[in-house]
Length: 233
Image (cartoon, rainbow, N blue to C red; front, side):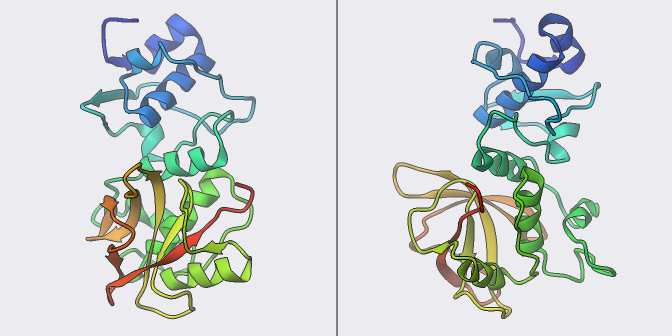
């Protein structure tokens, strides 16, 4: 193990080779370890054509389990190809924590002409972006949080229990109507709580630790109605 937790990609490339270096940085982000610690973990190099990338000058710093902003993660770089689809969705979502409306970085989630984060409710756009970025082929395109749930029902992907990482959590009864909210499940905990990453929470992408029995979201403070499974997961 190298005696530092702050390693740049060039240093890792010199010591381990480019493929392993990329896998190390992603493993550090997903597991909450430092890059040096991650070197001791089994790492699968990204396959040819993998979307895992990192800026050659980026430094990944991990202190107390919090991953500092790095170019690759801020752009939502996916996990190595060996990771599951659910892992890639969770990694994409976590990599966006802290994106705000003020710096317009959230604009990439929106695809409609004339839409901006400041004039559009963008929680659904963010959730859908994480699926697209992770390689999900069929993705809802609605800007309505409850609409994501309705899309899930129409595609036989909506369920009311047993969430898993990568699922979209829907607040409010499924319907193409306003007033709801949607986020991304990134962790299911032994005590029944969930960790989620949700867009448009206080005008930013935010991490939430919630009890799914009582958590509420949206302008109408809807409770969770269910979850949408990513196609192919």
